[in-house]
Length: 269
Length: 291
Image (cartoon, rainbow over all chains, first blue to last red; front, side, top):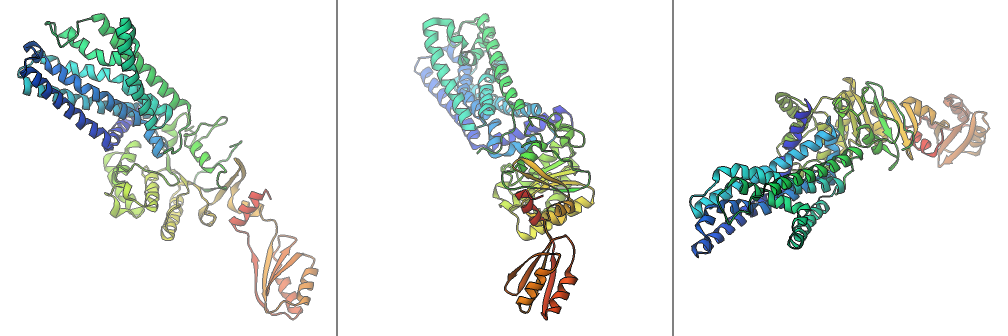
């Protein structure tokens, strides 16, 4: 079996392991429920005359982005347990005593977790679009929905990689998830305050890129004037894309360094 | 661990002994590339598991001590998954899964989630997992721990048969009787250092300090005692009821001379045995540093 085959075996394993966790399934159900409730609420605003026809024709974008909040949480939970739970349960010994290189093992774990996250994002995108069509009728720019989905997948890389890195650094799932959640909330609050006070300074925070990239991309694609989308800004779009890539690469390199250079920890849980 | 060095030849059954905390599991985890040695290296069939785990561990089956297996799998699924990790084709995985579950006595439990297994059943499954790739080298850390006596005997026979089929087996165990029954070679580690490595007979010989003849007489008299003590090859005689423990100066079978002496002193001899050293005796001697 070649290296790719071994990565695929671990990726498949990671799917089974993550899906066996009830909290991931619970969050998926919660995300869809939340999306439905928000769409129903927006429908009430529309009926009450608080939303324009133009806004209602692009409401699918809001519907899809609402699921994004939960996707960040799912990213943190899937990433945070990926490496650490194997150490906690003592199964890392069993897996790494098989003919597989550590880098292949980590790649499989990463790809398995991230592909699962992408499927969840696909599901929330699909549900967002369907709910918008159901409650608001014909939508504009739906041809860009696949790109919107890819943008959300790409933007979720930051918190998935951050949580994945903590998972390997601390080798404890609770602490890894708590640290990643702490950074998600702290970054969100600080970037809002700094954005208000100093404008572009907030862009260095991970939440800015993670939350701004998908709507910025849509602004570039949907050229019609819109109150739903931010003003098109190609520079900001590229900046967000670059920030996501840099953060993700740094986090993954740190995790890989830790795994490759240290001993496999015995059962810690 | 400090300068641990030993070699296990192809086809031998190597028992790895040592007290708790001596470094047995650390040695095994280093052999599997899970721990990186500060100095030196491990070679399994010529490959270093830290640097080339794919080549080194392809030939290895490993059963860890009281493993915690993936509880979301059932036994069939876990065996299939482990077979995939070794790149076995689907048909082989299916056949091996069936065969191994039968071999370890878990045929009826194949479709039940591992979370419902007892400690002994997990240990059995762990041995089955170690055999999925039909390995040339089996590394087992306390493989029969948690098993009932019947299962222990079954697995002892299994290991003996595997060894007869040419497999190299490395067993870390506290069960010295088990080790003495199935191993051809032993290694002993104490406080992170190898105290002995070699054939099991050599260890028994090396750690035998003195031979002892045990005699049971109808009645121990002063005459019997003093005459035995006067024999030139006797070091000391200890009395416990009607039993005599005669410590010899040399490693020599002198039961004939001792029985004659007892008869000459009009004693009635009920039994006479040359007490052979067991692995446990040698182990305890080695721990005391009495080589």
